[in-house]
Image (tube, rainbow, N blue to C red; front, side):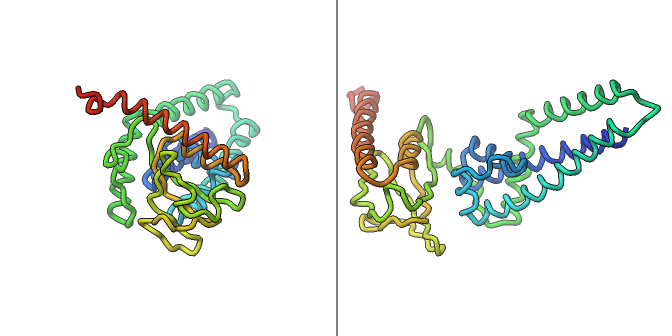
Length: 258
């Protein structure tokens, strides 16, 4: 029975590490969905080569969290497989295979129920927030609440690649404000940060942009490539933003004299 207990302890530890890493990623500015996916990908070693992972490796704090995830994942998976082999391959006169399977399945179900419990999530968030405030300089305030983010609006990051539509354009030429996207800051490859970029600030390959806008607009911009197709998508995005602005204007009581 010892190998089963070892396997359950390892699984519980891996889930705990993943949950803690997810909360830490969220505190660095990632969305909950993105943070959860990246933590699971790094821990399992599957799918971490996606383009979204650039948001992790290009951020110093997230890189340190990623390093721990990769170590824990490699060590944990090897240990879990070894324990599983010992559980069912080594003869045991005290417990049948069915009994072992029943205990293992019950333990896994219990761990999963505990992992998705809102009480567990609240306790972990409180604990991580306390650790970050006490031992790091990482700002852990709830910016979603401070910025009154709701609906589709969010603050996100855009990593600029060589073939992106924005490369070598200044903010005035790019006209992102016409698409409903505001550039709040620019982090250069050398670590330089421009906190209030002006109209003449040029966007370079390797830059990390901090932007505010609708999720769909930011996602479309992130996928836009240079050339005529990118220009057409830019004009389409401007027209779409005009329609959104009209709808929001009609829904605004102040605009309608209510």
